[in-house]
Length: 105
Image 1 (spheres, helix red, strand yellow):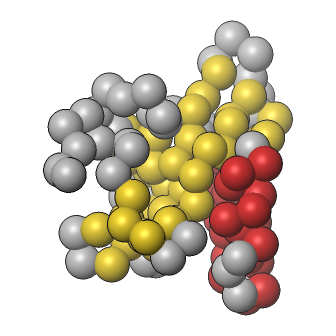
Image 2 (cartoon, rainbow, N blue to C red):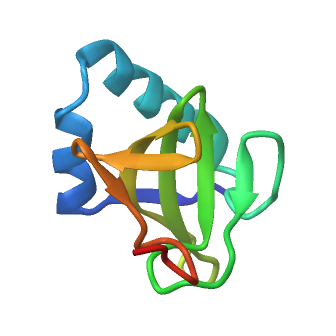
């Protein structure tokens, strides 16, 4: 069963801010890893703690793709694209905490 992959406008903007070679890594990685079993944890796919933003994280090197899975409608919704630097998720040049259940302020 192949899931339909949808990217939000915000995530599309974040993707286009990256260099073209990283855009290609993300496009290829999303197509390869999220089309068939997006909710199956693996070395590249991690289930996140409950939060309002996303259910899962796809790891592609230091790039991170946060997404939700609609099992009933067979859809993957990409909501955020960023880069992991140390323990921080950097999105559009700023540290992002909206995916954490207890954000540090």
